[in-house]
Length: 212
Ligand code: MLT
Image 1 (cartoon, rainbow, N blue to C red):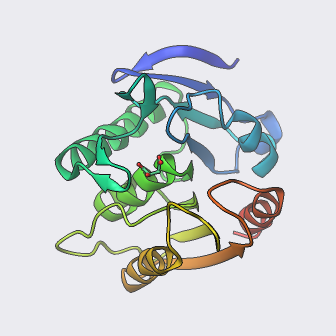
Image 2 (cartoon, rainbow, N blue to C red; image 1 turned 60 degrees about the horizontal axis):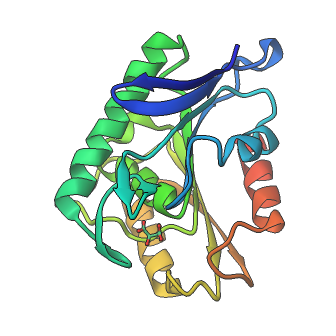
């Protein structure tokens, strides 16, 4: 049974359990972009890993009424204290949800777009134990931790647009280098696009997930 509009740790969210045939698949943690909500990426989750369990929280921060996962001071300028706090809060939510919905907390892959990708990257850097991997669609460097985590064994897909007006290619490359330096296995997919999720990126992320 899919659950909608429930709160765990104050996060409004949706949870869809895995189909009976798909319990070995990872749980997808779906993280929407600015102005989205817990419904936004459900269809994407079904496309990326049909039958997989989906956990989709709504960001708790409101910017002019638009939900986000952490505060920003300006476009691309993050409130780092809030980002850290929200990252820990989201990681705790995933752990709490794994107990409530009885899914394997050791097998969670974040799928984040834009602001959702940024908090997913922040989780990899600050609370890596919560994720086995991530699909980061159009991410930035959320923060650079004083000490890099150990990301060995974690697989990360980064989708980026060559003409992204929000994320320069150098920033994407910086993030990829940071995650690789921490031991993560990073796969990059560049497209001739801006700050949007295009079908070719979805197809590439889907085949990357299938081959994990
Ligand atoms: C962010 O604030 O996380 C990035 O600027 C992406 C976005 O516009 O949400």
